[in-house]
Length: 272
Image 1 (tube, one colour):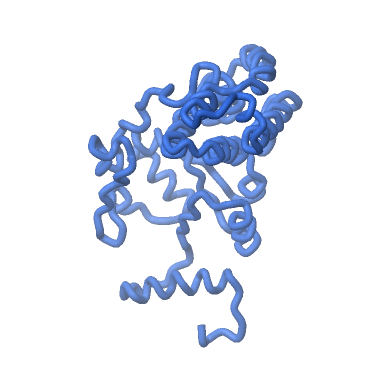
Image 2 (cartoon, one colour; image 1 turned 90 degrees about the horizontal axis):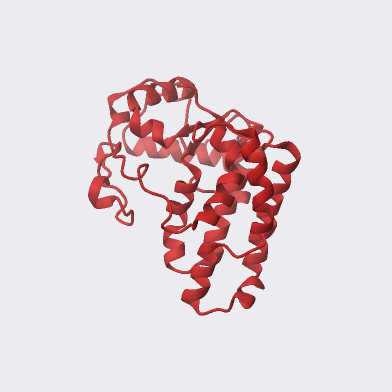
């Protein structure tokens, strides 16, 4: 830092990476930084985009209902209702986030990484402008093995395998009822069609869109389960801020689909 007359967050960000490489005795000149900005809040996302207007964004995609159940699992177990609904809304609004649509961004399917890594990783390398290396197929970082996430339900089965398929083969329904799934599947439909998770059927989609609108105003199956576990009456549960916030977000997404039949400026999938 002593070489700079002034510093901003972007310069400091780059210097941290340079310092890290120096500690590892890596003095190779580099033109790219791969930064895992994991589940950033709105402030962090916008601030990073402001400081790095030329950044390319890589978005990990997964079958949305399955992904939702996986992401909310621990919060659901802990009866963290706000955490559950906030996660669902984050997923629904991320698929056409203006930050991604205004910059170079693609989504890569987790299923493609798991099922056909020898095609997906080279395509990723080409998009990122990096050389394909054997280490990209290993579950390591700086030569150290990553043993997986012990909190994952798949940890003991294939948590040590980077291409294990247990997660993407997991059945849906552990948290979301059939009605919940219909609502969420309809709201995610344009994304699912674009990423190849479902076949396009405009007539069915339009019918489902009409069917789910009054259903959004009712309690979801997972909400009734949380209310039951917390011994809260449905009337009191419906009056909570989180409940109203969830409906507001769902209706906003429904209104967009009702007007445009899609989400304008959705993120595009990586070409493999």
